[in-house]
Image (tube, rainbow, N blue to C red; front, top):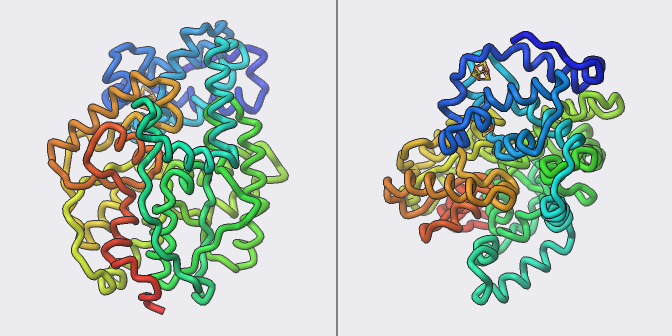
Length: 416
Ligand code: SF4
Ligand code: SF4
């Protein structure tokens, strides 16, 4: 598509990046068929092509309005459109720029500002863990909307005491909400890797991947979190103390794999970010090459499950089919269901900022999954897991927890 950027945008880094992306779009409209918000709302301005056009207008000098902001806000950033697009339009990178420019020009109503600020500070706070513990105590008397945000607790089990003995070592992201909301996921990850002869370390000083700030109008704060994490992780990767940094929440993995993109205009960090990104792996990427060894350690056959592939795994990280193949090879029967490419409506804090759309997508997803009558739904992102669980009595777990259970939580029962 032809563009004619406004003079204020033409010579900026963001303007140049956006212009390059915009020019690739040929307006074919293929992406409309896989966009969840267009499927629900049927408004072109809530489709990828429509949003691209709105952002082009802003970059060409048309003043954005609250309606422009709302159409961009309704986007889940699921990137299903990127998977569908035949022209390689990097919609995700474009909407990051578009949202920032629109938010600079259109002040949000105070209620939205308060919600977004509270979300950023609460989810990034060290008090989130104690608050979650308190929430569990009073969960039975909480209103449904709050109850849904607090997963029921499960026993974490015993962790291997001597993971440091393994010659292979990896780093694990400390994360922000996952350890408090569902500590069983990290515990299961540590045990499964231990069974494979891989020790897991968490580096002090690193924290949230930056996704929460980045998607709630605080991109500069997110960039600072990325720099802090790089400084904490990179010395261990560069020195060979650890071979990789593993992600068991695909939302965080997607963000960390894009650190070099986000820091592309920071000469002090772009090279460091590139070295880091090269070593980031989803947990399935680490486990998949060792399926045969792992299978020899499993003491039970897992029950049939439905696997929900998060958008951040299939559309952001391009790992379509990797977890599915690994689970199949481990002996899981995966129950197929319709529309597995569509977002479940979780999308970070979307369930709070766009509750109706989010619930609509969740129910649509659960309806599709439940047609297969699984006894358990598995996924690989804490956001999707808690969001889906809020709408069903069928257990929703991380697949690594089921693998851990099939190993009999076999601490010490490892290959090395
Ligand atoms: S599929 Fe790609 S090229 Fe076609 S309209 Fe959508 S973004 Fe543009
Ligand atoms: S990222 Fe998802 S919701 Fe947003 S335009 Fe693309 S397909 Fe639609």
